[in-house]
Length: 247
Image 1 (cartoon, helix red, strand yellow):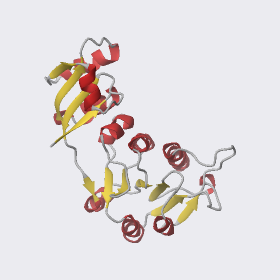
Image 2 (image 1 turned 90 degrees about the horizontal axis):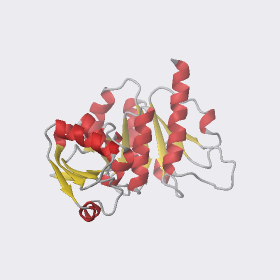
Image 3 (image 1 turned 30 degrees about the vertical axis):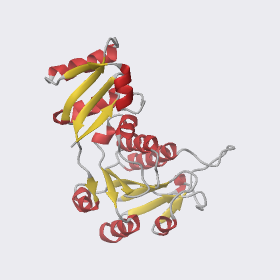
Image 4 (image 1 turned 180 degrees about the horizontal axis):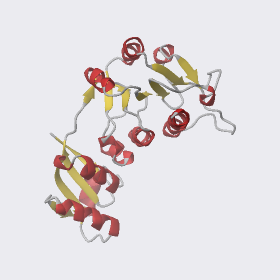
């Protein structure tokens, strides 16, 4: 089985982490771009085949995505499931987990993955249903981070949350506008999972009920909510800030 990735950052991430998965590379003919030329040199140095194609072909392969003149066909990556959780958790003394409940836009998923990688998240958990696919669009937006941060799909999110709490003593912090204190008033340390809900609807009821703590992001302006990837960045880097003070 194979899949498609596109865009310079996604291609750079694949070259850096899993070049053995690259099968074919397709390049826009007659494009003279310094960054692209440098990337192509790296590809050719590995002996990988590069095929020149027209823009229409690239547009069709990416459903008119912003491919930046480069598309690659790669071996399908590993799909993580709930059975992988014990092994992943055993690798980290104080894991930092991001849980996305109901994020259905691949652009938002990709942006959250990119932020999670930057903040040192060990892995991401999403429900199997009502969640964005980890497709070429998400991987492009993730800018290569999709190859370094495992995304685990679970059949029953509520059951997974119970397992994290009861078997691994992970503190579950959910974000909700009605919370009685903000993210900045919370102590974010130790084994920790940050749970983000969908824009507008927020976390589902069962997800919220399994949280150990609910926090909000202070809002001073006219808008009542933030894009989920922006909110994720705020929460994760507050965790980073607090952990850096304890080192």
